[in-house]
Every structure is written in structure tokens, then in C-alpha cells.
Length: 376
Image (cartoon, rainbow, N blue to C red; front, side):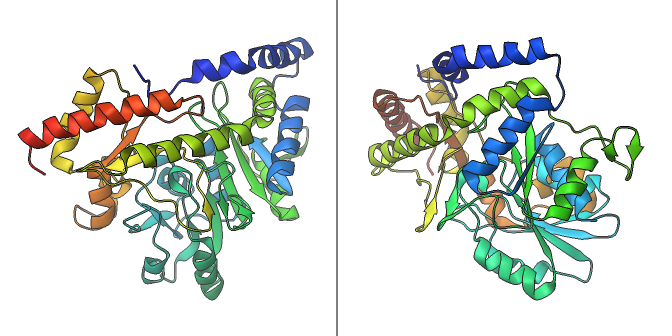
């Protein structure tokens, strides 16, 4: 038995420190923002070279806040990828702007920078690349395009805590960047949480007001804001976890290396790619299989006690809630194929080599069985 994700084992390893930190918050009576959140913000900023780290209530809230702070609204367009979680596009829609999609690189599933320029119109105000699965998009090329057209870049780094492009961390290359601390993320809270990062002092001031009802001080509402504050318990948990994130990241990278070795010659699957000069943090380890075989492969793995998942089977442009955009099937063929072919295998830092080998053995057996019944 190998679960897709094992949050309990991680909690067991840090339980004494987490329990004390949470109890300290409960005893303090400072349950919203407060010292615990401030400590986490400082630790996060110091770890990744971020001047302003502004905690908030979720990754979706972080995306919404960044767009609001940038002044993006009705009539504007934001270019992003259709191969992402729905929150990326929904946040754009929430400010009244329109998400404009571009297709992906076939080997990484990241936004293809070479397709961005063709999507730019006079209404384009920003580019929102997604560091999908834990690997940085081509930020050099994306920023050059943005500079040429006077656009703001907002990084969706929800899956990329600690990822690098060269010597720069994810979240330090755009005007703003957004992180999620949903429990299953590489740096996960014990509930919801998010963060917006920026080096711009004026934007940081605006973001802090926007997350707290637009206040610059109590009951003085300078701008129209929202209740997107991070709670103290989540700040305390994340502050403890910051002490371990680097070790967990290296453990994920080791698990990925084991997978690459164990699955390297398995017929019928395509392994994920880590581009040269990038540090992949492997939020997801996703292989590609023949779309017509995927359901049977998942069923075969489940029968052998192996957890699996899909990221993401239906690209955003094909989601019913975005049907009004008029981008039907065939609009972004690379993303559509990836969504139909991707299969996520178990990935968590506590995985052992024996567990990886168990997954690989089961997958090879299943592939042989399925291929005999369902030709690729």
C-alpha cells in the first residue's frame, strides 16, 4: 500500500513543535494575523529573498489581492495558461478581467512563452505564468515580452515553494507572486492559507490594506478591501514548517530521482522533465500515458493499493464555468492532450525507496496487462 499523499506522517515528525506553537496561539488570544503570522512572514521572506511577504487566507485570495493591487479590472485581459487549477483563471474573473489562454510546452506542461505575444491585445494588462507541478516557467522570456509591451507579471507560484530558475527563487521574478499553503502543498498549512510577495513598497502597503478591509489603521478604511487575513494558527504551523521545507524539498527531489531510475525503461509511459538550470520541487510527479488507457491504468494501480491522482484532466478553457469565453475543444491541443494523458503518482517527502520501487513494480505490471487489452 502506497498512498498518494501522507500528511499524517509529516505531522507525526514535527508534532511536539507544532502542538506547542498552536497552543501558544490559542493561549495568546491573538487568532487573526498577530505575532505568529508576522514571524512566518519574516521567515518566508528571509528564506526566499523576498522583501515583503504578506500572508493571507488562501492561495486564491493571494491571486485576487495581487490583481486588485495591480489595478486590473473590468475590460482588462490577463494572459495565462489553460493547464492550471481553476483558481488562476477564477481570480482574474473575480476582478472583472478576462483570462486569455495560451498553450503549453509539451514536455513540461508550462506556459509556452513563445505563444504569449500572439495573445496580446490593446486590452492586455498582465501575464500570469504558473509554475506548474513545482517547476519555474521561462520567466526570462516572459519578462522580456512583458517589458516590450508594458505589462505586469504576476507569478502563480502556488505549487513552487523553493523552486528555482538559475539562482532565483520562484516568487522573486515578477512584480508580485502568489503562493498557496493548502494542506497538500509542499509547504502546507493545517487549513487554508496563502501569501503575496513583492519587492515594491507601495504595492506591499496596498496589499496589506486590501487583505484587511482597506484599513491603514483600525476603522480608517482608505480603500475598499476584503477580509483575506491569515489566522494565527496557520501562521504558527507554517512558521514551524519553514524550518523543514528545505529538507523536505531535497527529499522530494530524491523521490523523483528514484522514480526516474525505476521507471526509465517502462513501455507506454513518458516521464516528466526537469529543464536544465531549473530546480524542480516536485509538487506533482506526473507521467503521461495513452489517454485511452489511463482509466484502466488507474484502476489497476488502485487494485494494487497504489494511490493516484490527475492534474488536471480538463483544462480551464473547457470548464463549464468558462464556456462564455468561446474556446472550445481544439483551441489548445497541447494542453488538451496533456490533460487527457497525465497521471500523478504518489509523491511526498517521507516516501522511501521501497515505496517507490513498489509503485514502479505495480505500474509495470499494470501497463503490461492494460496494453494487452487496450492498445495505445
